[in-house]
Image (cartoon, rainbow, N blue to C red):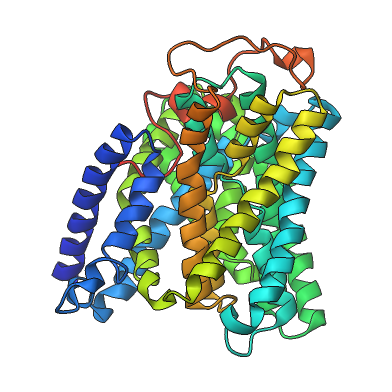
Length: 444
């Protein structure tokens, strides 16, 4: 069985590499290719051939080992996502970012709750709570994938435009709000009664306070010391072991392991990213890029498009329309009200509609905890894939794609201090600090 797992990993990496090359030709981010590979090697495509090929290729006995490997890649990815998200950089950006960020979460959340209530009877898990189902679905509909968004903005030459700056800032705020909300939903879903829910949330709050008030200053001193001595190996060990321990702590509390990895990335010192820590982050990204494709296979084996049947088409249309309309209504219209043209507001709405890997991670949590059924999981994965694919073509259609030359920021809805500032970590990503590496998902 160990040999089969090794062969499975090789198959996933090779298929992913081919699809990433094809995705680049179609001007799609790598995560789109990786999600597609997961669907292709599962029952949705390969399973249509005679002989039950997915079962023989990925036997049940191999799944526990593949799941562990996928979790390693996922936890490291979430660390990088937290590291990429510099909340301090949002200070001083005024009310416009806060207003649009809250609306771009609140509107799709409300529409998602309404849609979930309509789909509850047919697509909720058997015996599942209506309240937990609609709250979870509302959170899933309100997601914007910060890492994938950063990749699209960089490739489209939008990093210094008002659309790119605003999208990055709003996506950062949305990410924080979404993970906090999801942590609450998971805590409620996993607890037995209100008392335990309150206990889990209290422990989570204490954990966050401990990480930001105690761990963060200690990390700042430790990273500075290791950087002065050029101790790459020890810093690498500190980062990886700290990520795993933080993941263990959040899982022990009852809010899933990925939250711990994300928080550990957030408390890492940003000022050190231009030095040794940036090199370590690039190394961690390579490791994650090798392990994370397995996550898409584990996910893809749970997606069976054929099982939806023709009866699932109206539900899929409802899910996609809800997701698109919710983000456009919550992001594009407020942006237009704050001074953007309709063309710019449309491009901004398309950027905020990207969901990518972040959405898949959240959906996998829901599937793992039994918050959604397999059919609902399939519908939401397809929605995440379609909305992410659509971003780049929409930007080209409205002529907001500048891969060669970046126009200056003019008439930005952000304060003037942000218009000529150097490219920030959250805009350029780890790639801008340490070679050509990104935090946008796996890129074998």
